[in-house]
Amino acid sequence: MKQNIDKDQTPLGVYVHIPYCLTKCPYCDFNSYGTNGNFPEDAYVRALEREIESCRQILEGREISTVFFGGGTPSLLKPRNIGLVMEKLASIASFSPTAEVTLEVNPKTADREKLVLLRGVGVTRISVGIQSFSQRKLDFYGRFTTPDDCVRALVDVGDAGFHNYNLDLIYGSSQETREEFESDIRTALSFSPTHISAYCLTIEPGTEFATLRRKGKLSLPDDSVLVKFMQSAREILEGEGYCNYEVSNFARRGYECRHNLIYWNCHDYVGVGAGAHSHIRHEGEEGWGRRWSNIRNPELYMKRIAGDGRAVCASYDLSRVTALEDTILMGLRLSEGVEIGDIEKRFSCETDTCSLEYLESDGFILTDGGRLRLTSKGRLFTDDLVAKVCGVFH
Image (tube, rainbow, N blue to C red; front, side, top):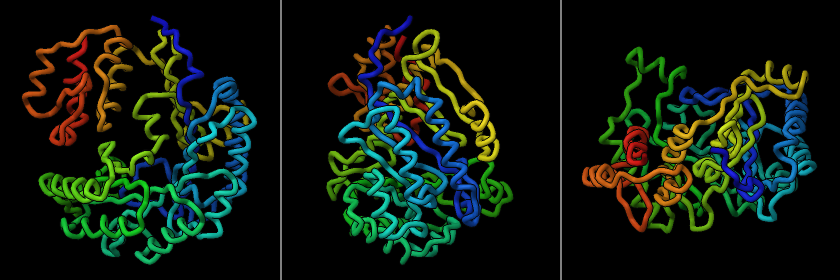
């Protein structure tokens, strides 16, 4: 069933992956590589420009709503190189007058002067990887920053003129107490950021932490403790006027991360760079969407780009079932949930009200005004509930 929807009217995001870091954190499973500051910056940026050119057919005629420079550590790059990427995008597609352009910053790799220059090349939003204001926790997470670095970075962000910025916090470190995490939140609030991301530490396969845990050398809080941490975050931040609009994300009204909302609403995004992923919603043989991803290794990525301008290593069309699962999985992460009528219309399906009532009676979901949402209890089991919620629609 080919869908006849004007894709030019849907939001378009661009993700730019910078895979280089000074050091690799032991919990990180992102496509990133510790370099001690030695990496082929100019060559990598040229590859990004060439790949963007190869995406002309997708980008041309579209309006870019958001750009997100992620990593790795994008703030390792010179502002002029960030500007070159922005200029290349602008040479092919138009930018929304209110485009959100986010760049991730490590406190050690950006000062006020650099941040001012980043504003000058089009960056409108900063996301600072604080993780914690506790030296104990920073050491545990393998961060080379200090609490003083974190404070200085946040002051510099404000002094450079960025009034819309996020800061990341992580909770769930070894021997962490609820009071310690609450101290992180209250310190973060003292800077009045527009957005705070509070992530629970997860042990991902292939990371240093995964190895330590397998050897019995890593002890972490149990789930009952982590639930209390999550409750603390919600109580404190909502009490200060922040909306918990997504499982791990809190924002002042109007300052939700628009780029991440593109992901969570399954809209179009083009990813460039080593290991970047892309999704175009109304492509594919059946019109349910197409996804593709790039080679992860930066050296191989640059070699492939130097050839034909592309570095895709996997590509597939979404089926109706896969598109439905994606819509449910991503939509349920949002506090507003999913619109039942929209799902019935888009996927030509009906709702099994008995199954829906059963899930609701278990306290995992609730229906309100035609929308399906997860409860606080349900948010603890988001991934496990997807299959059950998908089964409600047939």
